[in-house]
Length: 525
Image (cartoon, rainbow, N blue to C red; front, side):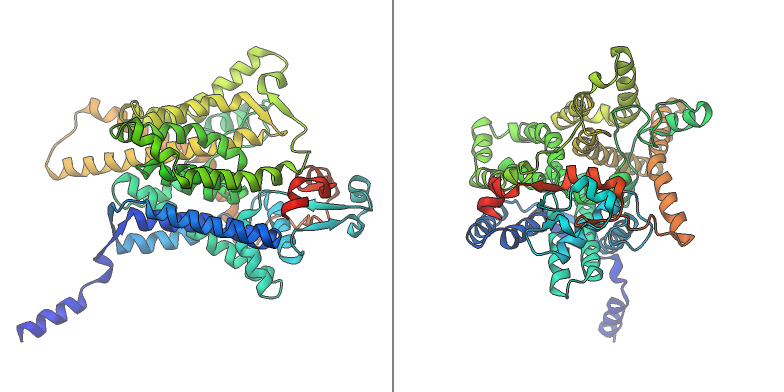
């Protein structure tokens, strides 16, 4: 009878109270597979048959070799947190506008057109300019000739393939895009918890809300109405650093892969696959690669790796995975990106756009003071000897000195790796501080007043840093609740543009004229 009672008790035990043991190998394998699948599909379906088959097989081999090298570190994660991360990942994906289920931010006009054309056009996508119907658009694009579609659209490939399979269905493509994004977010949340030392919902908090002290210039503008104000995070001319939610809402195709690669970089121990990570990020966000390269090099020579000796480090650096992945990805995607000549009409040293150096210096210092210093200061005492931290901050100090595009997309995207790495480090510091406080409380240890000053300042900074994300989230949620799903689909297709005011930027960013003369379209596509 006792045995029966014991059995009944075990049956009644709450399954959510259990733990699941994950290994780094499983987590990193899932991350690599998620990142590589769109690239493999691009090679298999967007390229000619022979190069497509060869490159797909090469990526399968690279993936196999990369997974073999991964270590078996273990990580305990409660089942309830695993379920929470899954639900939060879907929530974050939908909240970011992916799938177009709720109000979405302004850049989604372009995102919808990209998915529409990948689903409805034959690959590679070639536009016949005679299909343009708006007279103003025709004045810009012309009414004859053909242009190829070129953009870093690899992220949409799985969704577009699913849409094509189900009868060119945009609804199916949007659902797959949302679920695909949720998987990337989920893996990142788990990796952030891995880095912090335990599963924590703080991972989701910092994933969404991390930003700068934009609240200060926002209220200054509200009070004074100064002229250089452009938008919430564009409060100085020619330079902007963007909060996580703004990136997720506007450039999810760059942010989600970038954040995952950064999180995996932080928890990696050996550099045998780091070249693969950088190469894959190049497929999703070319500017972000510039930001992550120095951080990756720093990771190669961090304290843990240096213990193994330079000789062992170099063996990992020149591993077949690193060499082959970088070579193959550059071979495919460099000529693809270079096939379009009109990348930007504005580029150069940022100072040259100001007219006078003192104004540039003032704006630069304000940007760094409000966007970089708060997060860097919070973790400084713990990370000041961490080379990854040092180089991440250094890249964020250098990036604003250069400008590419009118709103400086270079600064906004190249800063994503450095800013997200700071977000993960602040998350870890918060988790450790919370755990220490709970342990001291349990042991009856009381803090002196002066010991509370630094934690109080850090907490205040973190709360203020959530302002830009919270502001945008309020716009998204409030607009959705009132039935507003955002601006009308003002582009439709790049093959028949509805909005004449966007035609010039579309022609500059997405068209390749005389594409037959480019290496990519002549020999690969």
